[in-house]
Length: 307
Image 1: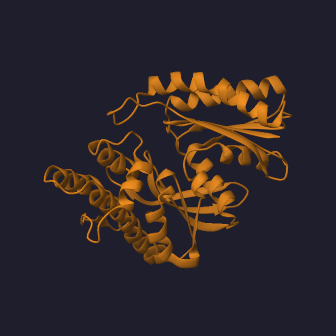
Image 2: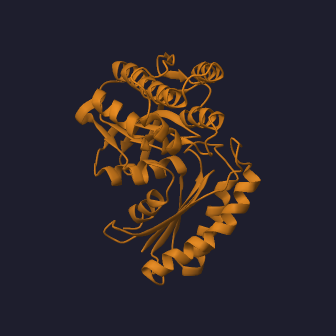
């Protein structure tokens, strides 16, 4: 068995796979954010992860019995860059290192972003070696070039200059009175939009997009009485269109390659459908169940470097 651990800003996650890469069990728990708040302090996130990990470990034990570990891996930082750091990841890293030492097995570390990428490839059922990945979440909005060789090689090609896609969605969602994170509830609102939802401007230049202007536009429209469902669909369309525009620019400059979409925002059905229609067979999406934060990618990483 290979154990993956991920303690992100809003989710505690554990996952176990076997030597064939089959998922044996996984457990997740969202961190609690007070109603009306637009986020969680790192100290509060650390405290909740410490409480959640033993609870989730008990879930794994109930589903698969005593763990027969061969290796353990954990996300230890947000991105695979020098200086990338958030306190919440130290909780999972400490838990995973302790387990590896107790079991006498190897410990491997990866970034949260690499975990998303591996879980996305696995859940989408593709085995691409050279491709683009679009990572959209509350903490990341990036387009990366990926080369899968002996190790993952990532190169940033584009992204946001201000708000992340998930922040845009969450800020509008909180303004609408939705719980945080707001993605699933905003998506439900958008389904009820009328034939002419709110038109939200797109701000894209080359491989860089901006969501601060679009967010201000939506907030003004809400004050002027726009229907919540029309605002929700307008936000979804703006995110999807913005991503498509920067992808067009990047493919024009660097060439056409397959595109993998990962991150919590990519669980949104409207955004997935829009991008799938634009890109066609060259697009693959992390399954809805594994688009958001999870530890499956970390477990796959442990397997990759042990077997």
